[in-house]
Length: 216
Image (cartoon, rainbow, N blue to C red; front, side):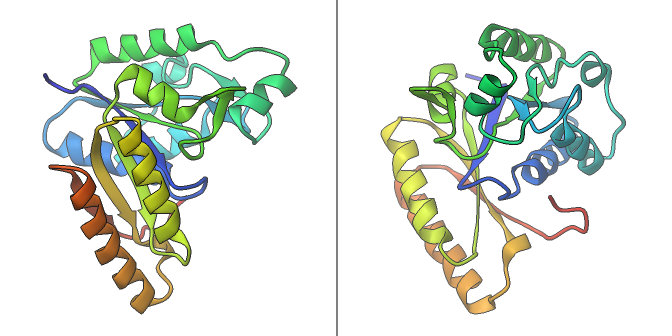
């Protein structure tokens, strides 16, 4: 089966999901794929998605017609918090049908669609429904972002075990070097995470991302 839509998540918020999403999109564009990114749910903005803006900057392209008509950012909430709380504060429910319809439109117009999540896998969308549930229900291959800062190994292993238990396909593990401040810790963390990931998942790609000046 040809995989068309991929989902990006990570061990935490501010781990570099937006950067990783734009980076992967740019890489696939260089392979002559027609690629677009989508933000599952944007919080902390009004009528635009700062994460989509960053994707386009990394990809080196202008906003597309699908950005202008909000297909790539179907749900936007004003307060910078979890989608569950943001929807309560804005007094409207998350429209999952709108999100899925937007993704379908993008799938019909592009070779690959990369959806960036909100926060980590256990961020709540509803009271008892989390990001990881959406990924599983939609059967999306997962691109997962981690790093080498102190504490990340434990967070990474907990997430990898969770991904495995949910029977989600881990397509790519991305190690974000932007947080590397201690070479000894970062090198050991990467090597350990690489070994453990390969034990848990077959044929997973492991990518080390370089630092860039406009990292977010």
